[in-house]
Amino acid sequence: MQDSMYAYMKPGIVHFKAYPEVALGEGPIVETLRKICEDDFWMAVEVGWMKDVKVRDEARMVIAASHITVAYACQPAMFSQKLNVNHPDPTERKKALNQIRNCIHEAYQLGSKSVNVFSGKDPGDAKREEAKKLLIDSLIQICDWAKEYDEMEVHLKIFDRDVDKQFLIGPFKDALEIARVIRAHYPKFGLLSDLSHFPLLREDPATSVKLVKDYLVHYHIGNCVHPDNKRHFLYGDLQPRFGMEDTVLDTKDVAAYFRTLLNEGLLGKDQRPIVSAEVRPLLHYETSELVLANTKRVFKEAWALA
Image 1 (spheres, rainbow, N blue to C red):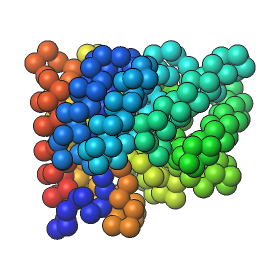
Image 2 (cartoon, rainbow, N blue to C red):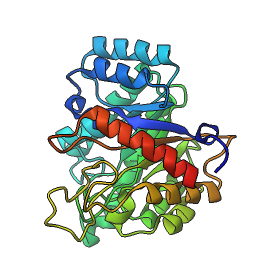
Image 3 (tube, rainbow, N blue to C red):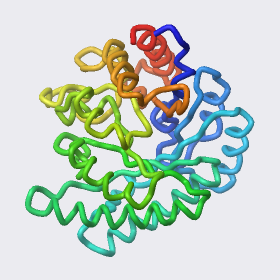
Image 4 (cartoon, one colour):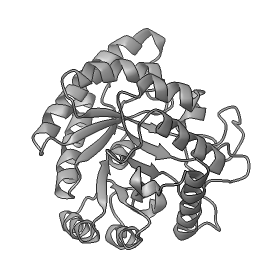
């Protein structure tokens, strides 16, 4: 690819993965966020839960001063409290929705124009259709709230169904089913695909991206251990750095992902979506800075190969 990747996308980083010490909404949030914002490689940063309003206010100012695009992810708040937007118990579902409503408010305070959400646990074959109905109902409520905040976009992230997170959404064909229903009412609703989740779903990126391309608006890149390698100490959805021994994704796979997105017209000068790396230091010798440097090299080389 001859043109700069910046002409086709906004390379981003997921803040609370690169610096896992802030994943629970506390810790050196502003200090680590400032490191990302001071690095002009990154055009986007995805942030999460910030419990302290003073921290959010300072983070907002750092983001604004750096001229970086910000997106907000609900995972830290939702995962840590084990909340489920398609829970069959109305009381539990209400807890999950209340937290997402708070997340939307936080996202707006931080200057984000989008919020990343996801389904809850898959209940199994017998109860899956009912869970989809509950998810659709929840997403409609979430999109209604988001409209109150300058028409904020809602992006549904696609996870694994039977490996680690074991979420309802889930396979891309089911993501398509949900997206069709919600997009009919909310034009700013879209899907988020993560490169590291294709192996966990046992799906081919080229095939699955083509299936849902009309709804894809946001992208992640990451790495994982093969789902059949259950004895591996990093088995699951742990986002190891690229090129780690016994993991399945590296530069050539990121390049192929970029090619797929380009071929489907999903990256381009007229839209430039966020494409964020979701990686984290996991081993004793890995620092956040080392993993970030690894990731930037992968971005650069993969784009050159795409």
